[in-house]
Length: 92
Image (cartoon, rainbow, N blue to C red; front, top):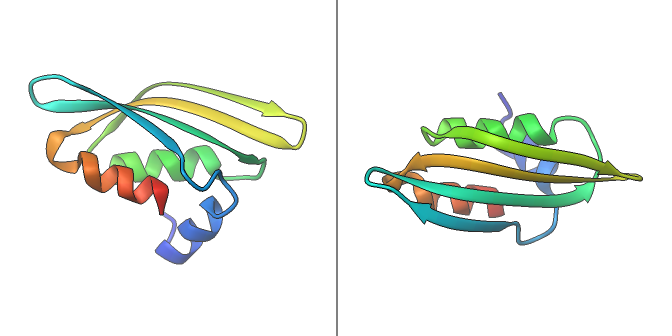
């Protein structure tokens, strides 16, 4: 588990406004999260932890290393009540 200060440091070099697209079902929202930034340890686990903390699940993900940079796209599902909270946490 990452404390909030470590989480902020972990994501501080990711693109300042990660992209999140929403799709809905009856009780949950599906989000596509895109992140690009310098490659380092813990990016995937940190984002996954944010999703799980909000009661969500990671459905599919695609990650790639591009030289010294890292790209990640995740399809996640979260309860509708936690959608905005997760979007805010990812952007923080």
